[in-house]
Length: 111
Length: 113
Image: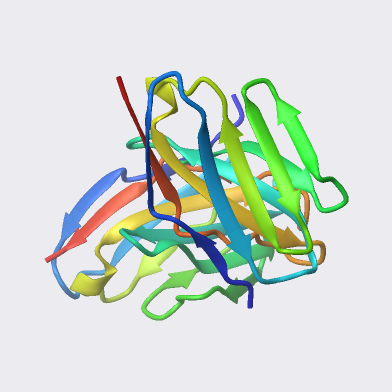
């Protein structure tokens, strides 16, 4: 099965950029999602990228995909305290009903 | 409002006492699943269902049962809970496989003593 690796914690200062990295093993992953979990809540889809794309930008969010290295990253520009949450990388192959979730990266934003 | 609801949100129980966590979605989604979330382990899938009367095991099905008698409901049943099932549980639904967003419920925090 797919293995997904993420670092567990990232600490940044408010206003700086955050970069959350993810590596995965299944080269057939077609959809690559980022989910956000705020304290005490369920997961919500933050953004996603298809495997035929290298980059996707959505306001303060930039997703970069390196298919050759099976590396996905999420950059949050001008990080705010409201961005403090757990971020899950979740690649999914086209024929699969389910994505595989990484362990999640806890983003801590301090003033 | 499109949503996935779970009940109860919090539950403390004792070993061996059967319990059911309900999950309901109002989006007419085909696909539903249950996850558990544990510190340092991320999300692990327990069971999933591709449609009514179709269920299958996920990564960690031991000690759990599910049923899908109606499209909107997907209850999680613990016949004889044990302390190692203390966890945060999430129900999720989506339109179908590959490329569809999963909608998550708010979570059920279960403690088994």
